[in-house]
Image (cartoon, rainbow, N blue to C red; front, side, top):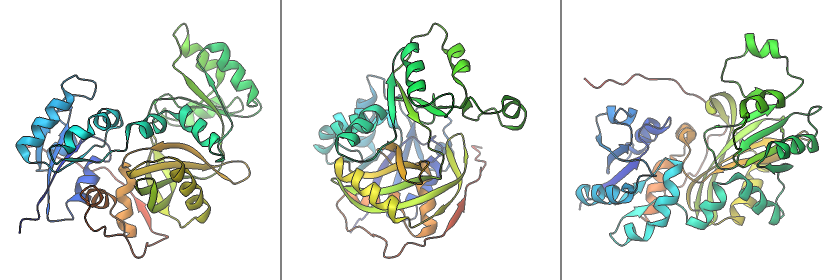
Length: 345
């Protein structure tokens, strides 16, 4: 009997794309087709069937994916790109009518998860502890929000409500040594101050900004598999080193406080499939949410070293196959990520 599983994975050029490809290839029954809007996406250099697709904001995006699914006999669409999620969720029934499963949560849940302000308001209404925050859409509101949260005595964090990948995120710290930042920190560091930010904004209109208390403690990513709002697997990993917001060194820790906090969040929001959370400890050592990624996280593949293959779990879940849930997680596993060269000769 043919047990081949044909998968279309988008975002082949995402930082975590090649790692997720490797994870899926651990099942010999999986046949991968990978896609990206960039013709030179890293995943296209991995001796796998590659197709170039339009970006999610292109009117032809869904039609092109549907055509590829038809031609390649795709059974599962596995998106890695945040901007594709709403589009695919809105058209999920169209794919399902053709026997194609899309690994994506329902549209209403995505609308909350992908907007940091809506997410915090949702959790606050559910009685789940969150960081202190304000919103601002004008320069005056930004100044006031910073002052209300204790700036300049205390640092605060600003971030757009709907951006992803650390875009627009800054830690405003008036006490930070500017000479130290200039000569001993790499240019990609997140530190700034309100005066510098106001100069950069100039006369531009502001997007909706979230202004949050700064959480000074340890930061964790939490990789999860969720079935219709019920958490099935929760794996916290401490972020020991990051480059441009991406974890390059970490350790898997069985932190019961984080697991309980994550369960409360996931029970309040009916998500489905592979989900990522970022949490950080406040000044009292209590963990508070930074954001939810309602999709698989690129670094989730590091969990293979601890005994959990999230990409394969996500595919099996989508096809309603028996889930190979881990019987034991190798807590304490340390991982490091590195660059690898790919060539298209």
